[in-house]
Picture 1 (tube, helix red, strand yellow):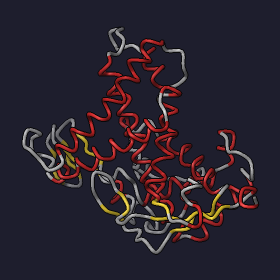
Picture 2 (tube, rainbow, N blue to C red):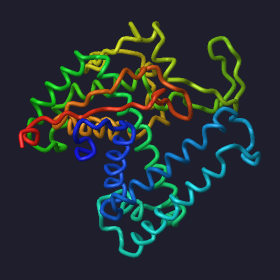
Picture 3 (cartoon, rainbow, N blue to C red):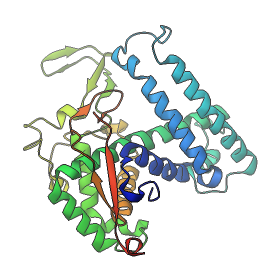
Picture 4 (cartoon, helix red, strand yellow):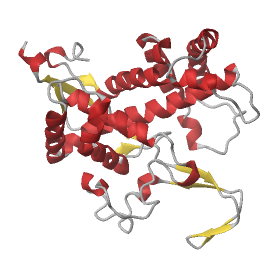
Length: 324
């Protein structure tokens, strides 16, 4: 990243955040069973697959058998993913499950009837975790630079915390508890710009919601993006205020829906917040990222919520490396 940013060269924020996130998540999921190049290739293929699904998102009730633009791209991307993931899983099966990564844990796991997961189940579980842990985090971190650019006081307070907690040393998991403001910034950014902007749910039984009768078995869609902007749910909802997430704040348990809620809430919330805290602190302890131009913070709706335009950043190096 530093080499690519030499001489003030602008970087594509989404591409750079993707590289960092892909390599971080693959170490958690796969450990040393994958190279950085393989991680980048899996990430690029999954990005292509996600983009190819957008036309179908606009027509969710059209059967999959009906051809759509993007279908061929999606199938090509899946073949790339499979060509990389299946060999990793097969090799892990041969070598045994003595690691601390998720693949090793899945190899140790059993289904409800006591059976081991087969190759396809291992592949599906790994890809699902990879998608859940990369695309949304990449989008969130890309949004974060535009938000910080428009909130200089928040950016300054965050920088002061990182300078105090991390200083010139390497960042470790031990810093997490002290990076409280970074955590609140991440949560508030996700309140205003939740990558998963809509949550489809199946209604179990007949019900009445807001005076509208809903039959059991119907599909409804909840939107964190809209709910988080309701003035009767959040005071001054369009204001970016990390203080909303101070410990002890009282609110309706479904007021904050970025990670869903109830029994189907996202289990990755703690991992996501820790990941963003560490990445944000790692970058800002070495660099002062500056957004190029004035990209709008207004998002674009698609399969996920994402910046409307490409975001470019310049990295001004700080700390000991800047003095060499």
